[in-house]
Image 1 (cartoon, one colour):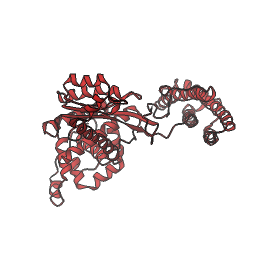
Image 2 (image 1 turned 30 degrees about the vertical axis):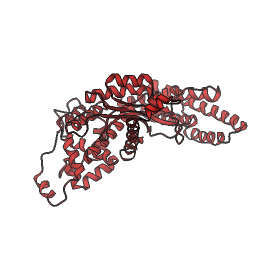
Image 3 (image 1 turned 135 degrees about the vertical axis):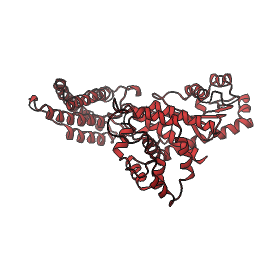
Image 4 (image 1 turned 90 degrees about the vertical axis):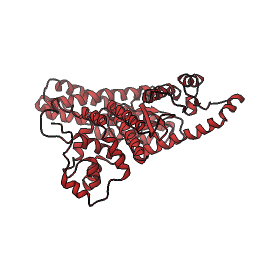
Length: 456
């Protein structure tokens, strides 16, 4: 049964009299999290764990405790294990999380509850935080600065030889487990190429590192051998899958789902490897798969000298005065920055119900239609520096005092992005799947906003 909160503990309140009070930051964050609408959003998602979670079963971890522990996790950059340990060992955090003298939920319990929270819920959660910030006059949305960054997926730099070896490894181990479930139903032998494929993938990397014509020919031959091993493993997996479909056991269904998922991804790797290595064809980024486990990962080139290619997703942020991220969205692929101006302004209007007095972006967002759009929506100061050649009239416009001052203010968005990456784990996503990626970004933005509100 879903429990909303623990009853207050008189013994714990007496004990708190002997220790320092909560920090000013945590006190203010505690006031924001006490909002009923925020609480109800998370409660709605947690109530969907089982069909009758709200009516039957043993008492769950209280919703209030789960919410506050998830905030603590991203507020301080803890892992789930570190969150459990920190809350268990600190009377201040016990008070903040409303655990009191009860047992602190362990890391696996917290993970199960966290997986129920949906990306859309976190977007609404952040919108509600902005409403509370406006009510308390922390911000009024008069200034807007918008910029994008990349949150990387938790993968190693991709290469076709490693992807093929990964495909062989995952399919082979699943086939072995399936044969144990099927027992006597499997008659034909199965050859496990896992170790051979791993060694061959490493040899390909060492060979192609030499950059000579002889190395290229040898690497091509090694790729052909690795492709053949992968195809044989796929054939065995298809045969096992047909037999698994006839079994109704839960374990057989799970193994069948794994095969169905990774067979299609491995076949895609074979296709792109054949086209690139054997046929010498250029494969576009949209057709490539760079990870069997995080298949949603995009290939992003932003022209950065230090990181010419990044693997993850581009996210776009709206920041208003007060250092609060009022809106965020995760983009598909690697779209042009210029196309993000209109959605950013529309999102600001939706949040604050009025246009900003000042709106700014980088050179990548500049275009005459974008400037005109902002003026049409009621933005008084539009700060979009022009790319390339600038006429004397344009130079005079960009050297005006209010424009220069706005450019200086806009530079602060880079600092906000840096803080989100360093302090709230937005540099690399450690969650699995596209939904996990959205939630990881959502919690990072929420934690960043709450940290700002706690210091304000």
